[in-house]
Length: 352
Ligand code: SAH
Image (tube, rainbow, N blue to C red; front, side):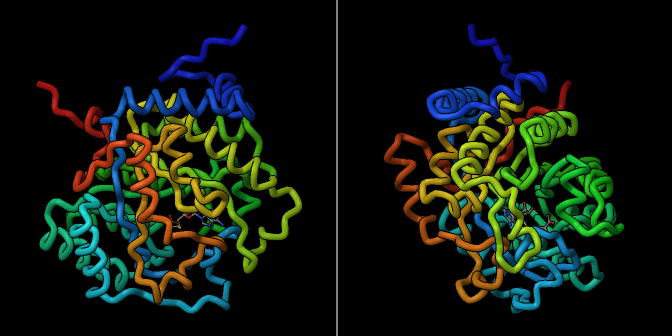
């Protein structure tokens, strides 16, 4: 007989069972992820604009195309006017929120530049929620940006396994799993709506690793997640690794992870990461069918996109079709909604 797996509190063993499903049984897990999503969130799909404001990065992650040592990349930082234009586009298209993402730069210049941009976006578009994804920064910087008007922060842990983390990064103080965990704690203490996430299908990653990641997300009581498959980028050291799972496996495992995370944390926001589109042109729709409730729409100007390639292959032009497609399946798109995670609303609700 099938073992009963609890929504809200699956054990590590339960999570591994869910993650291991294939073919028809995997479809059943995705359907459960989808149902759990509909029952425990607002039941609608939220939209997020994405502006990749700079590809300058001080880190050298072995998987990432914009790593510091990749000299083939032309580096850019969008000017203030262009970033405001992207925000205007998000506003005009009723996306409800905008994510500003960049490589990791820790400098007073960047800190001040970002602060200024956040303030201007808030001043011009007070209803547009601002999500930052600028990597690990000091608590003071996080506080400064929050005070300027930022609402949410996305910092993916990438993996909570020390074994994998060491394989994915150079061994030095700049690349430390412990420091990344501390940054997530600092974000939470600062009052952000906090998002994290992992890459699925990393070479050497097993189901127990992913189950531990999900339990970590429960432990830190995260509000939102970005879950996507690992995709090779030929200008990175990891690309040639012989243990990278086949694409099919990475796709199924990513959908299983979205569903398992949804079952473990029913009211959080889960975004269909853009990297899913690189594996399948219906990647985002499939993510929604497994329990994701947020779709990212790329607003980075065309001229810069070719230089912000974290991985190779990207089908951003499908963004427009995906919404029509989802609506044709009967999904309700929440145009113009800020899309706060219900988990966040519940955990911060004032009690009298
Ligand atoms: N500098 C920021 C933003 C990083 S880029 C930070 O450190 O948080 C955003 C995300 O892209 C990363 O968190 C990672 O999960 C994802 N990413 C990078 N390279 C990738 C690859 N090769 N395949 C899939 N996802 C990748």
